[in-house]
Image 1 (cartoon, helix red, strand yellow):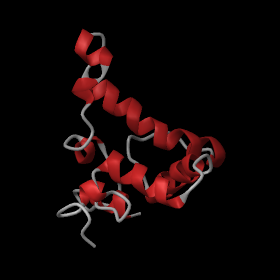
Image 2 (tube, rainbow, N blue to C red):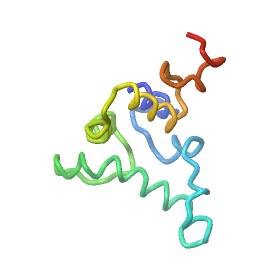
Image 3 (cartoon, rainbow, N blue to C red):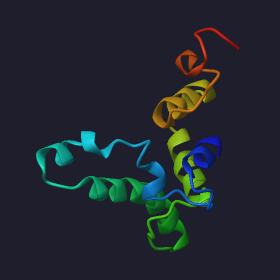
Length: 113
């Protein structure tokens, strides 16, 4: 939940397009680079990946807002295929640019505790 709270920049209890604009770089997506799609289309698709599984199970509809429950459901599903907690923590640290004991690059200086 630490990553969710960091990404919820507005503090409204949801992660939205505006919250992730500074974290997720849609401009690097091949379809945006080629002009086939806009960055907002990529952002929307990205957010929908979090909602999809949760809504399939619970009968909800996508609304462009990731709730804490949708976040947990998504990462519970992802973590089932990862062998170690340390690797999962490293993956989350690298993906969302958050500090991690398992990612020396995220520490003030390598090897610090």
